[in-house]
Length: 176
Image (tube, rainbow, N blue to C red; front, side, top):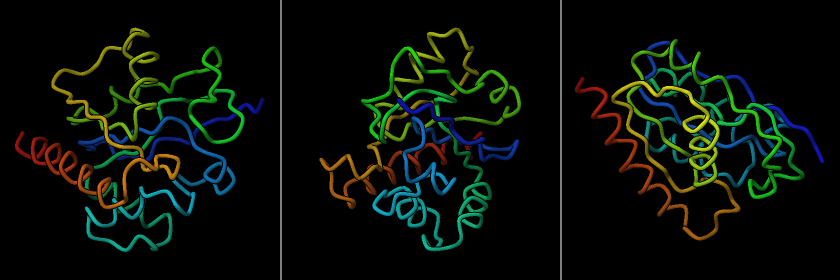
């Protein structure tokens, strides 16, 4: 079984919103880029919500997220998983990222969005139940996974659910 490691967080200290995936898939690991699979809807959704071209160079897309005070990371730092499916993560192999340090360095954080059910479940199991203190006032929201494996929703449906939640969390954090 393959031992994989996630990427560093993409963030600025003034981030207000953190979007968490579970752990990078094979295409992302090969390209060393978040959401690199060509059919993953993450970048088209973020481009639509934030007003940029989804085909911009990767580094520019990351800069656009940061400009909008959005951080990007994964729940899992290291694990064993064959392939890309979250359901194949060996449960006893999961090491969570260092959220205690992240929360300490991002005092303006107001919301965490989970890119799919697996990210939310892993966060609750390995971070919250793992004893990491959550900063007060943080709203948590699960969004439909942007993965092509989540074929239960059409891209337009995913976009609308992401739009509602992201806009709500951004408005809430801007009001503080």
